[in-house]
Amino acid sequence: MGMAGDVILAIDQGTTSSRAMLVDASSNVVGMCQRDIRVNLPQPGWVNQSASELWETTIAVCEEALADAALKWADLSAIGITNQRETTILWDRSTGAPLADAIVWQSRQSSDIIERWQKAGLAPAVRSTTGLVLDPYFSASKIRWLFDQDPILEQRARAGEVCFGTVDSWLIWNLTGGLHLTDVTNASRTMLFDIHRREWSSDMLDRLEIPPEILPTVVPSSGRLATSSERYGSVPIAGIAGDQHAALFGQACFKPGMAKSTYGTGSFVVMNTGARPATSMSGLLTSPAWSLPPDDPFALEGAVLVSGAAVQWLRDGLGIIGSAQEVERLAKTVSDSGGVVFVPALTGLGAPEWDSDARGTILGITRGTTAAHIARATLEAMASQVAALMSLMSAESDLELTELRVDGGAARNDLLMQLQADLLGVPVCRSAITETTALGAAWLAGLGQGIWSDTVELAAHWRSDRRFDPQMSADERLSRLDQWQRAVERSRGWIQADADSVS
Image (tube, rainbow, N blue to C red; front, side, top):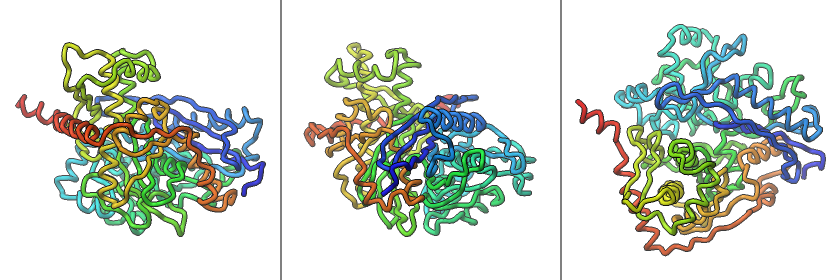
């Protein structure tokens, strides 16, 4: 049991905001602060951020949360860090200054490099070593893109003057005054990490022409991993995990077959598959769930690139809602989508199709179609994407889903959660703490610092806010999912088809 006075700072650096959350030994949230951050879209399909802004907003929310709780850095028992994954930052090893904008996980700017690697026949080696698919989503092609743009940068990298890191590494570098670390979960999303041996893969580094000199040291997700500098209270950094791994942990999905879905900009469905990695033949990703030696389970993951972002598009692109919260009210004014199906492939399709040539498609429109039908079709799309991934996961892991634990901004939408239960055919349980990503980081740090003894103790801290039971017949469910698959097929390869018709 933790001491009553133990407070853990969980840092959650996401794509759209930086958040700091203070958690006590009973897993109560005793402070929180959040700031939005800018996303730059320099060209279609490119998504970049200022690395300096990621750090500055992170440290600002930490200071503010501490001040609000009348605490100082030195009062903290531990720090846990969780972060948007795959986002790629290069910085100068001697000055710590960023050498380029951060290339965000969503960015497709390295698509040509992926095509080159595809033609070179690298896909099977990538799959068997890293558990990933060849896609611009992961860090390796983003690093290669930066070097292709600037050969001098590559020379400097080979000379040991450049650090590469995902966002966790960048924050740790700045918090510690120059320690270059990452954890197993973040390393596993770079396409450079051997998930079976749990170390950087010299084979992948060779094949993808990435210099090993730039890489951080890989540590477990929990333990006494580093210490913040004196300026930040000399506090143990005792937990590190990529956001989806942290959310799986924060949802107490500690047993094989337990799964969670996080509804944010995209949706991320992750299932704990236990000690044995489940190899996907259909475009799901295999990653370490977390690393708490000797317990090092694997996970299967499906990434939906556009989920909450589709609701933002209804607001900003179409102007049919004034705020994201209005989508539920509008969608409830109709009993169904009137036959409209929306495939929100606004930046291509993620798992399981991994089709960057797919584009958003709205099918089944008639003169009777209204804004409400499109709003409802958007929520149905968010639920259908997750349901399609879950049925694949169960099939490929031989593990039956008995409930889905949910979190993230859109999990507050009751209509969406009911649709999700209907399309899954199993109950959906919404966590009482919606910020499960930050909670997972806090739990990893608390375990690492000995505030809690084990995951059994933590499982008792997990609480459900509401349970949604399925109300749809099996026939109706199968027919909806079949219609969804037909719509997805029609959205695929659109850019390619367009290019062919021009030539």
